[in-house]
Image (tube, rainbow, N blue to C red; front, top):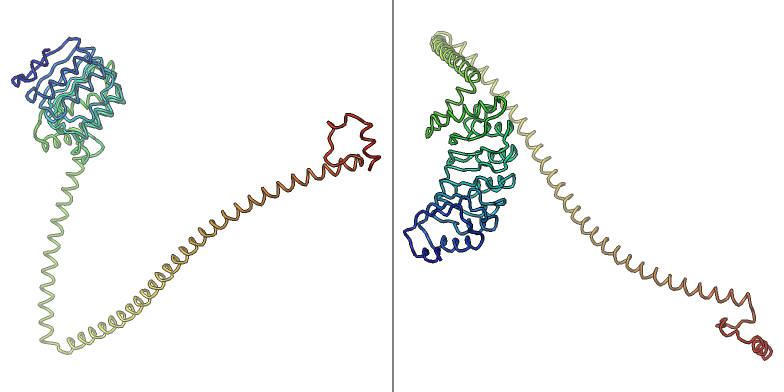
Length: 401
């Protein structure tokens, strides 16, 4: 009754139905209201343990492409959230799925939803007490690798140990090399996890990387540089030294180039002076150059002939290849025809074998008949033991014969 009355009320912006026993019927009525209302931006259904999987599916489908910004379905008896992957919630900023059985399958669904639908506004995701282990944490970390919206991820009261934390560290600061540091997630500011019973280096580095994300939030370049300075000091020092050495080498090359230019200018001046004073030497140099040019021309002619020969060889090979392909096609056609003929011969052979079998059976019957006659010459063809009721009648029969 409430939802029917509220359907036409466009002023409803926030709806709190926490700790009610709505069940599937209640969610069905709520879904009708949600489809009509285009102003609701906050919906709290926490503690409605009777919603379960069927109710959750009806709920998220009703919210598809809606203006909803905050959705809370904490402790609603949900163990299957697969319906979420086909739903777009472009305005959603806060999603609370805590105290539901999310598990590994739920993490896979969230991964697909985060990567394939419009979640550009999602800032906070609550998954506390969701039966999530290291495998689920790794799936979530991969899904968030290119995410530039989510800032807070709540994962307390789960069983995420060192491997899961290492996956999140790889997400926010891939330390394999400097290039991968720049490709890391620089938006995520907080990953809320349980305290470990023993110290973990991965966990310490994870918190350090998240601190850097918080400190320089909004300035990706500053975040990247801070992470590089924090986690790649040695590598940065090596690069700086290499750059310094390259700079020094460039300066040396510039100096050498200046010296060479001066030497070339001096040599040019000497050549001009030599041309004016020793014309015979210049004439000899000219003759030497002509001889060298002639040699180069002959070499070029030889190379052109070789190139022509190679071109003809390539054309010949191409022609042979084309012919071979044509022959192969013909052979394939013939093989297909031979297979068809073989199939027909096999069919005829089977018919002949069947006829032969019939003939063999007829001959076997005939041989049996002839053997019976040989064993008892007085037995007429077609005689059976059933007619042997009176021996005297048989004797009369043979007497008459």
